[in-house]
Length: 315
Ligand SMILES: CCC[C@H](NC(C)=O)C(=O)O
Ligand SMILES: NC(=O)OP(=O)(O)O
Image (cartoon, rainbow, N blue to C red):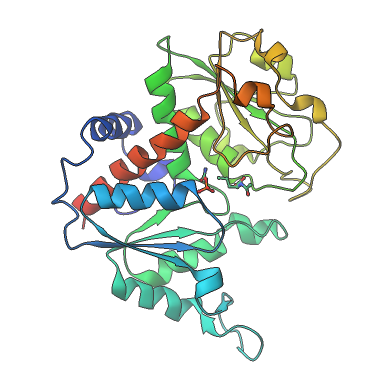
């Protein structure tokens, strides 16, 4: 595996899931594989799970790890090619990315969308500049339009916890007070459309995701209908794709409650975290028997470890 930026970088998602579950059983079996290899984790935005789980995965493989919060600890980055840098930016991404590539064997980058310019975000301008200039293999720590490490962990969780061969999986939009990226739902949809599940996306009218990511999914504006016989409900907020980056209408009634779950097939409730309690998901669900969000977060280590193993094997 030369890079991990989307499901399209994976030849066999089921084999990758199986590999992750094997590593979960025997986390330290490959400590020599990463010996004297270094991964650099570069964050342009906050992170808890991705930061800690990817470090742990790399350490499990014997790698050295360096973490840089480049937005706070690095120089103010210039991202526009051809810019006359006579303003507040101090270093161009061309140099910053290339220099980072001198220090590491693999680089991870987190770069959220600005949610202002859809063309800029959906062309992955910032992320792709790191890909272009760093000169080493790259793993996405969440980009403007995808979060593949999260989606792999989600698929691992579904495979581990499913009680029937082909479960019904529902991506259910939930309310929020801030406009959030579409990266997590885009990526989840892409992976679910390739997995052996019956996949349904439920959201209020106006929150349609870009169809590039949802080919094969059943899409409904009726949450109750979607929840019927669901085995997994993946709860996530996202802002509108059109008008881009906006919150449209008031849909507080889309926050899941235990009463709504009675329609499901004893569904397990998933969320990538962080979650706004009693806004996106109720306390009664998060603290109740249906939630698997902590188990899901734990699987981020095994997802990252399986990906880094394959990337190390390709160095
Ligand atoms: C893993 C989730 C990161 C981010 N969440 C927030 C709260 O910004 C998002 O929704 O993409
Ligand atoms: N789910 C996830 O990626 O969490 P962080 O943003 O805390 O890394």
